[in-house]
Image (tube, rainbow, N blue to C red; front, side, top):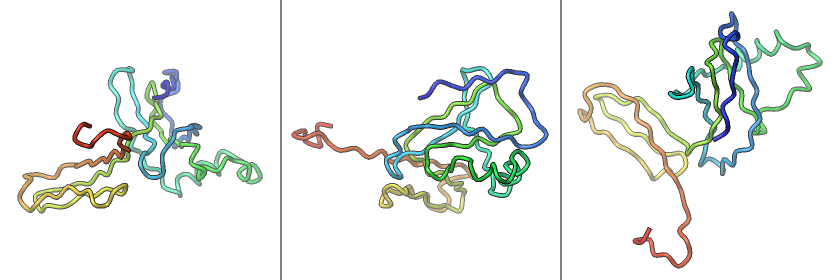
Length: 155
């Protein structure tokens, strides 16, 4: 995990969305891992920063912040080495971390299924009536290669 980015308390709320671009060098191993932004106001309890910025919001913020000729020189985030944090409400800290990719779906009394994009054969199936209310279900698959000479039953 990378050291959290400390933000002074005087910079807490803005009228419009703000973009922070954070470079990272995490080994994402194809689709096995993902970058996640965590936020904290005290450095002890952390929660995921879940603001999903639409392309429209990103373009509006970028066009309000830069001249047209400067926009062409911005780093391309599709390279996968830059993570954008978009927010109007700043916590005390942000942390950029990588984790095993997590599939999250809301499943209710009607039942449903969550399957992994890493290994599609891995699924969690909830039959109708198994749940009494709608909940978020997360599924993570952590691939590993067994060490040579070690039988699977010893792992």
